[in-house]
Length: 134
Image (cartoon, rainbow, N blue to C red; front, side):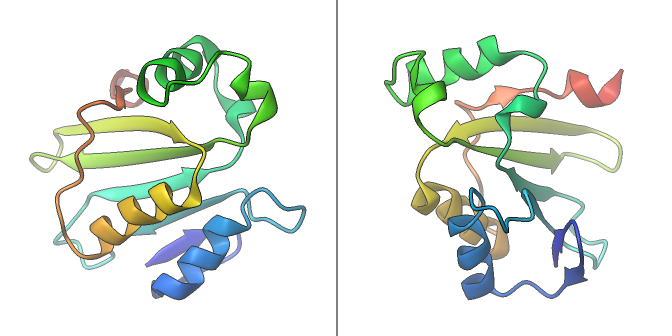
């Protein structure tokens, strides 16, 4: 299912691609979440377009410098997607990861993996589980 600020509906990859490509426009919904409502898969993935909502921009700078090879000032010059992925090991045991990318193709590739029940490699992403377990 796709969940954005206005509606919950069945996921359609072409519609998802359009939403992602337009996240930085004036008419954007600002974020999109994809969840499995069947209860068999509690994992979810979501994409935001507003880095300003984060408390610690140092983590953003560190990530883009070490993973994308950009300088710190790239945050002011480029639009970065925030992608978050929650993966459950057991019913109440999960890890929550966050990453930042500037290319819609990269974001779409992760969303397609989620939709196809493929493993998402979040090893280089920031583990922010503690933000959700305290």
